[in-house]
Length: 242
Ligand code: GLN
Image (cartoon, rainbow, N blue to C red):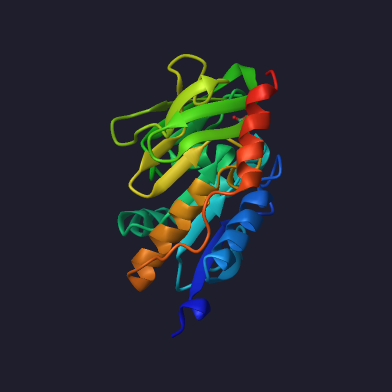
């Protein structure tokens, strides 16, 4: 098979319930970036009740209201084993905000409900009285400087099975107290950052694509590098006050 024909199946998690603050932009950026690297992305929307495709190369999902999270958590629980197995097998995943919370062990909402998570990430979230809102700048070991926008009332804390994506330079991130943002276990990334995240941080798209390509085809030959749009977005996010 020619490199240009290589397919990557991207599973878009719960786009009907979990797509706020433009998180759909992650899918657009990821598919374009995959094309730029010479792949042929196939997007499969996975809403509540839908069947999982046989081939899964990348999983991405966005944020949502607590009410949407309730619907989704019930469906996600049924699929916990499947996602745990995919994660253990090295499938790259990116989950934002509401789904980040549900990829952890549980989300105790501010109104007193407990939403069960699937525990792919070793994190736990509790709804606080104060929302954390604003632009965020993060220094990360794996992706350099990451920028985005947060708007959540969930306070997330990490256990030893996940490491933070990075340290917050501006904004709150996981919680107002420990200076961390996001979580990583293996190739699964969770983050509070909307923006959307991927158009502004192509290094994360490249990580997802490279990891998927190596896992499925045994190799990855990059065809594009960092781009000027991402550099401008990072500079603008830093200039703007909270
Ligand atoms: N409802 C969750 C919270 O406020 C998630 C919000 C979001 O996805 N932006 O913490």
